[in-house]
Image 1 (spheres, protein in one colour):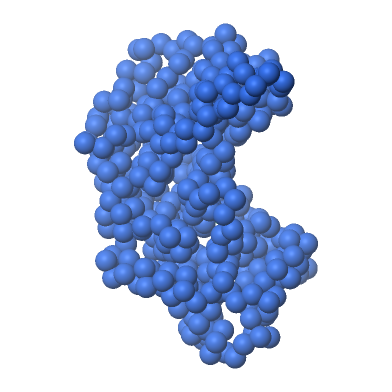
Image 2 (cartoon, rainbow, N blue to C red; image 1 turned 135 degrees about the vertical axis):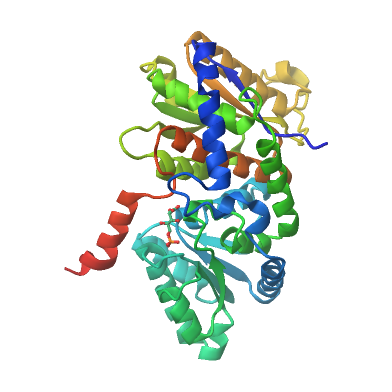
Length: 425
Ligand code: PA5
């Protein structure tokens, strides 16, 4: 029997009856998500993990990553946020902090300085490109791709360039698809019924992840485990997605409109970035939202912590707690204790880090801050896939509870449209 991610609560002042009253709403909204019977159900393809990718597609992805891995010194992934942040976050969580990666995520923005440095860095390297854009309405990846493609075109024949580009885009014949057909680039599709930031178990995420040597065949099963666990549990006090959704909802009703995701594990830094993007674009609409932000502890115990403890009580904190750090790095004993640190000798870094965590929670309680604990057994591939499915499901339920459509982002689209059409004027 596998272990699952748990959600535990330390809430200041919540009325049990308010929670019980929400039970029918949560269950019926989750049911309408699963059965795709409510409004906004055009982009729910991600929910059926088992159907999202076919065996043939999976085989093709595996063949492609082997080809990329063996033939190129660097693989540059171009895209922006919802189109690949999880892949970046996932690889970051699992890799050695100082490993030089074969994969480069060229994701930043429209900063010419960054692109100039990237072009210089790649100039004499043998590299391939994975370009990800579902809509091709985003100028950031589109322009970055144009610049890199130009560099490749100057160095190689058309035939050779075509072997160096993989395009992941919408199945319809939109610009990137047409361009890929014309130039003979290999393509993978993002299904029509999957919204961008929910496209986790599609080539969008799987190809870059596979390219970094992770076992994508198993990933589908791991995400399925979490789906089954959520699907089969109608108890709002033990289903992790339900607990997270109702707690946020009740806290918002009680005026807690800022959620801070805190982590004591550096490897979860980009997972927090991904989480922010997921909730910002899914829930941040119609003036009803919780504002999600994040802190890296213990670093930020030397900065924003001061503010959190004594700011208005409209804050609540969600904390990642990793049970087993798997490191066992011990602090040595030093003769004479010149640095006066022998008081922690033979303790592990995990012990010291957890002491900071426990102290932080205690101080939060004294400061009347509501706490949601997301308990992760360990940072491993298995639990990261549980985590992603848990958050996607909880985020959609939470948005439904606010009567907000999680599968759009009108102001992001307005910005894209302006950049793609009006900028020339
Ligand atoms: O998550 C989202 O929906 C967005 O952030 C998109 O992923 C992002 O705008 C990129 O879009 P595209 O893949 O069409 O370039």
